[in-house]
Image 1 (cartoon, rainbow, N blue to C red):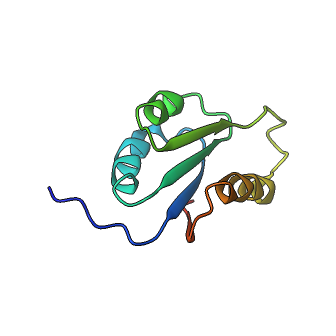
Image 2: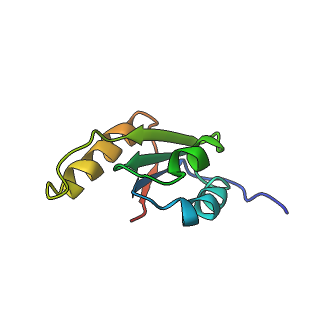
Image 3: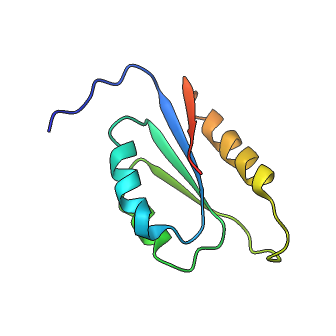
Length: 96
């Protein structure tokens, strides 16, 4: 399979929790065109870390535990954006 020509530096940002079941295929596809893929894991109890560690382009971040009712979706996305800026991307690609 021929690899696509990458014209822009794209950094993917993925907030996740217990998504190992679909993460492997997602990361495989993103790896073909993304410079970096940043995962923000919000307390997964499945194999999310194991899946992420199999990909060189993945930067894995584990969020600190908190009360289940403490919803921090906006904060999690800001953390992802802050982490992505250090790669000086042309584009941010958020997947929810």
